[in-house]
Length: 357
Image (cartoon, rainbow, N blue to C red; front, side, top):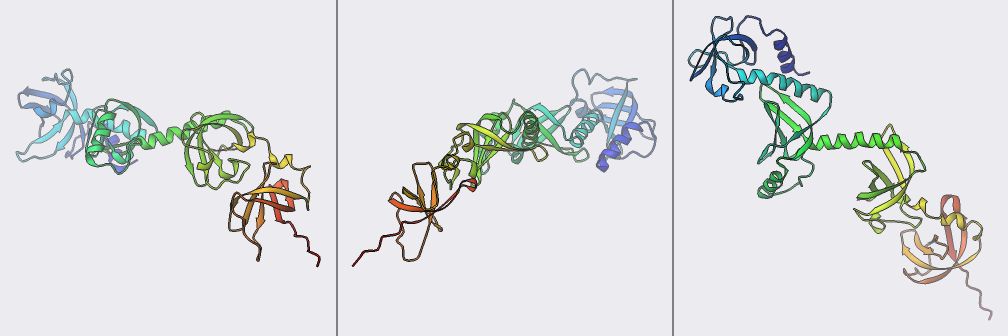
């Protein structure tokens, strides 16, 4: 817990003590008088406390009905102002419980839901009890980066009056700073939701979902509040160089759960394993030395990939002195090696018969 909050909790526990007041001290006292300038409070000190009328105006009508004889708590705002007064605040004293609540929410890493009350050029304003929390623009998940000031203001205005989840990320009552993050709350909610979903899954389950993003290594799919990864090698029985060749963001897909890591909250999915495995189907159809007719599907640094009607692709490695076939060209090749367990088919050019002279 921060030093300021250790002080604050100590003040709440020992608020009746007598001594030299300091800024931020919480004291108990009795109202001596009330007029248009504010209140005079007997605090049991050498000097009475002064509550300015502006402070009372921050209270609700009911809370502001204070008169002689009422016992109240106040917080020291200025131990000695220019006129020699001990200036205290009723409103800030009543805020102290809200500061403590905010601190405990931050320590417990809890999520709170609150309605957005307004915005300024830097972010959102969120009422929190008697306090006003600030959500920086960088901590708002649905606010695009790089907006100009006018566009950002329009986006922020559209969020006002909406109820959103937040996490408390900074609490400083002495500087009167209460900072919230909607982005971190959303991230934690997703992590919690993912953990709950993982508890309901088992390897071999079929799950429908929606593609949420594509990466060079695969695609992420939301399967009911939790994102699972389809690795690029699990997208198709054909070789895939770019996931966008197979999927698009927003596309609905059927997937198979192939891996679960509850400790790391990771879900592995597959598209191809819901389709017949052409490598298994070719076990009894291919042997070393067999001649095959296929079509060049693509070229790589290693050679040319040849596709066959069996649904397989094999690699014809480049060899010195041999022409490189173009994609789409029909070609006759020979099986050099076939390893269905590791999904590998190596090819070689069909030998050209010698011409007798």
